[in-house]
Amino acid sequence: MPTFVYLGNYTASGLEGAMRDGFESRVTAVSDLLEAHGGKLLQMGFCLGEYDFVIVADVPDRKTALIAPMVAGAAGTVSVSTIELISAIEMSEVASMAKSSDFRVAGSGGN
Image (cartoon, rainbow, N blue to C red; front, side):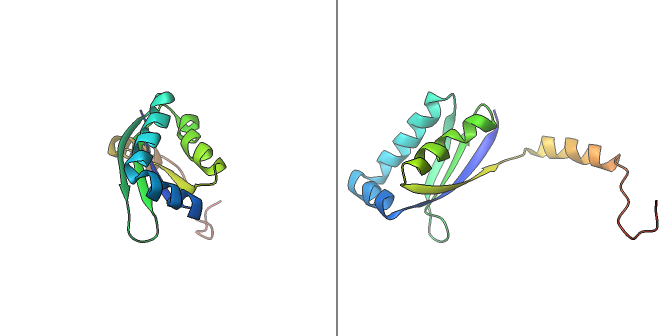
């Protein structure tokens, strides 16, 4: 299953709800949402700095990866950026394909 990272920030109402209900409730809610669509929460942690939380999850595909941020974003409680992780094996496969590509840099004198 592909792995995705979600970087998120709470809105004022989202933070208020997490403080009231406990941050553990947010982990449970995220896990339940992912599992309902065939995914699995690998890790959820809370941050200092630019983001309020980070989620790492395995999900069946890209479309499924968009469900959690869409549902949470529509509720108005968070804003989320989604990143698909690429494995080292996949990157090596891409590198092999790239090595066999014919590409001329603009201005290099080639046709």
